[in-house]
Length: 209
Image (cartoon, rainbow, N blue to C red; front, side, top):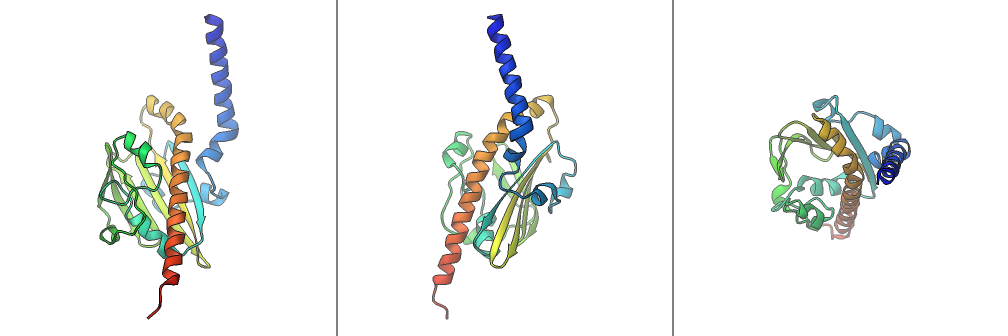
């Protein structure tokens, strides 16, 4: 039994070293350029010295005006969802129901608006329509920003999470969550891309007055 435990511990240490040396940065910076991953973004100043962070991005073949409506309405029911795996979110009791249409009643987010995510109450802290949307948790330990950069009719969407991890348990617990967060956020970014590109195509196809 002692030998098996020692082998298991050695294997765990080896996997941990492999993750930290080779996999962690790609997991935390999926599809982001080095400039995006390492540069400053609006909202960073609200949590200037995080214990952990991730920056993930996607290119969208649509103008920012076709991306923004989906960001503006994000949130649990009755809002528009988060465009990822609803069934996983709802295992956590988050009441997420992703929609495929723009909801006019949620197109004017304002600083101070509250959006509950389970035990977290996320407040909108910064809004620059068509460019920046920044959420911050009620306890101040989580900052989530979305930034849109449009060029030649296409949009780069950059999502950044910054965390304070005030306890040893939180610092250890975040490590196995990092790969899981990649799975969920990648799906979210792809979902936003699909919806924005479809909205842009539908807008182009409408008869002009």
